[in-house]
Amino acid sequence: MSGTPPAPIPASPPTPVSTWAIASLVLGILSISCLWILGALPAIILGVIALRKTGSFSEKSAGRNLAIAGITTGGIGTLAGLIPVAIALSIVIPAVSTTRHQAEKAHQSMEIRRILLACHLYAHRHEGRFPGKLETLHPRYIQDDRILFSDEENTIYYRYIPGVPANAGPEVIVVVGPEIRPYVRIIGYADGSVSPFEGPLPPGIESALR
Image (cartoon, rainbow, N blue to C red; front, top):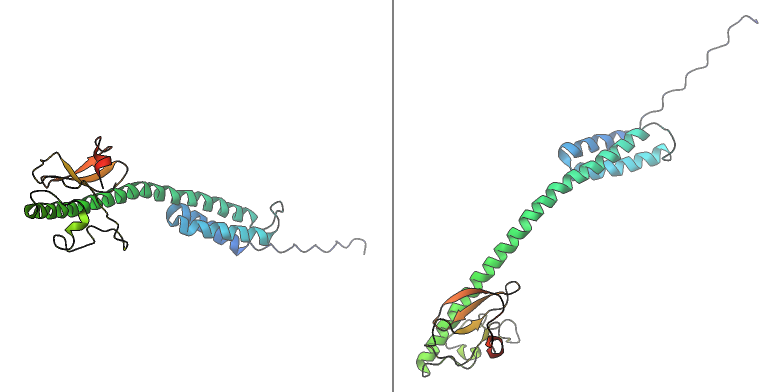
């Protein structure tokens, strides 16, 4: 009996690799190449779940390395997705702002022209002088009160120099619009012309406006 060889010790079955870790790594790789954020965030989440299921960060268990690799590639995919988003925003935001400013310029220019036309019609009936205040133009000369008033309390939207002669000339400021952006506004002149104006208003104009 002493010569009988000992029975072989059965090999322990291989520990199955966590499907969470595999999914994390696959999504992490895809996030770098095509999915970006759509694959990166799930890759990180699944990788963290896989680590919790396979043991602590210091424990060597099946799938741990795959989970870490999934989290790492997911992080890289997040950065790869944020870079084009940042570039796109840096292009789109200034373009949208410029378009909005141009639209506001056009809108104010149209309304100030209508105000100046109404002022000239008023002056034709009142000894050649513009009205003492813009409210006088409504409703006889300007029917749409939205041009003059900015809210339900009838606050005047445009500032105005009252009583200017209708023949004062092209350099005499009559109507000033609110700032479209700092130191940029639309100005209407006594001859009916309208133009953008950049910079502080000329001396004396600010105190004359009502």
